[in-house]
Image 1 (tube, rainbow, N blue to C red):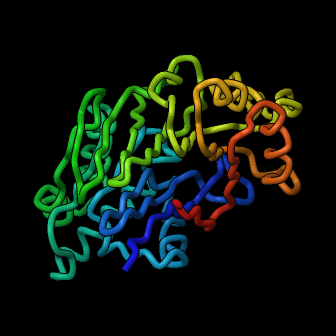
Image 2 (image 1 turned 180 degrees about the horizontal axis):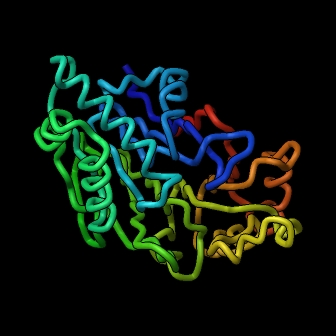
Length: 270
């Protein structure tokens, strides 16, 4: 039986989405289910249900950085897993991959917002795994290497995931592809990164003021570092027919495959 390999985009929006959920996704490689970020609230639960992902099956979650639109959905997931653990319905540890700042934020939010019994169970079930630059893990045959994503305003971790067949997935959190992280992203078969809006809309959405870049900016760099498939998330969600509009702009610079997911879409890894 062929193992399933896919990226499930639970949410694709930026910090203040109007018609979508904040950017977060799950990568499934055979027996490994890897959740990246959780968005900003308990709206993550219906998205997980739609994707047929049970919190009971989540044992590896990664937080790229501690901004509200990435961390609070994970806090809800952790609370749910703690509840399941207290009911005897969750097996094994919950491995949380986070850099030092993100780990401290998770611990403190859980301490301040969980009932004492829930917090004590959280301390028992959670296993923090450092995701600082240079940290490496081998999980179910998948190699994961962490690096600094080059954020200008927060400590943010990115990762390169190398599959058993040698293909690679690089994820930059909500960072765009820039000159600060292009070396870490080079030669990726799949690159997942942020692109806040089209270049033509930069005066409307003001991406540069938020330390984000446009589709054009990202595509121009991607064209020079041998990216196979470019996947753009963490963007505004008011542009009509956004996937087509973004693809048109990206194709002016980048000749590889381009995927602009909407919430709930799945990208099959060939």
